[in-house]
Each structure stands twice: as structure tokens, then as C-alpha cells.
Image 1 (cartoon, helix red, strand yellow):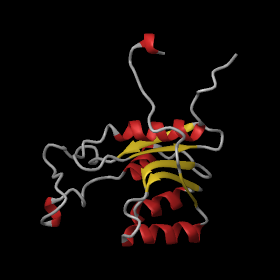
Image 2: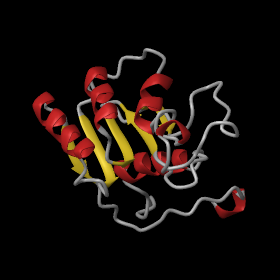
Image 3: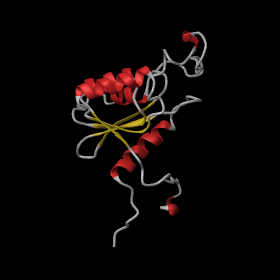
Length: 164
């Protein structure tokens, strides 16, 4: 008889986004994204960090101060990284699983790439102009938004094969 405690597709893909976020070196906010086609195949993943060639030991991680001395002008968000990591693969009709609701800049990239659904866990910046603008653009472009409420609080990962 087959196992009955396996994870759903949504939990699987969001789990990949959460795991991708663990690659981020940002000391305050780690965000991950996973883009999936309509056949439930992972197309690409991304996390927030500096562009290739921009040393994360040299560029700032600060959140406040002179804007050029903060991370904001430099960090590439998880959603944009995932889209760029696709290297031109057609993302038309895909879903993006993201741990934090997309900002307006990422919303533009999501819409332009043809992604038709955004699945997210956190919308902690819902009241900001960036998020309000994102939702307005997603609505106008017909991009479906879905807050994921997982069936479980955690999924345990182990590198020990005996634990599988």
C-alpha cells in the first residue's frame, strides 16, 4: 500500500522555494522562488542576492542610511533571479511559488514573462505602495494570486539516507 503522508504539489514547490531562500546571504530577509509549468515540472528557481560579480562581502547589506549604502539598489530579488535563471526558457502559463509577496518591480517581470499565477506564503508588506501596485498590475494582467496555507508547519530534511 502506498504512503498517505506524502506532501502536496503546492507543499513540494513551496518547499523548493523555502529551500532556495536558504541560499540567500541577506541577514534580514531570505526569499526564495520556484517557477513551475502546468505539467508540474520545475522550470527554474531563485533567491535574493547580489548579481553575479558583485561581491557580497563588498556590497552593503544595510537596510537604513544613505540609499547607496543600503542593499536596496543592488539586491536582485528571488522572483527576478528565477526568471533570469531560466535563460530564456518560455515561462508562459507557469506558476511562481514565492515565500514573500512580490514587489512592484518583480510583478512587472512576472507579468512580462507570461507567468499566470503567483502562490505565496507571506504578504507582510501588504500595506506598502510597492505591494499595492503589484496587486493592481496583477489584477489588470489577469495573474491569479493565491496565498498558500500549508497542511503542515514544517518538512524535515535530512542528508542521512537511513532517515528516508
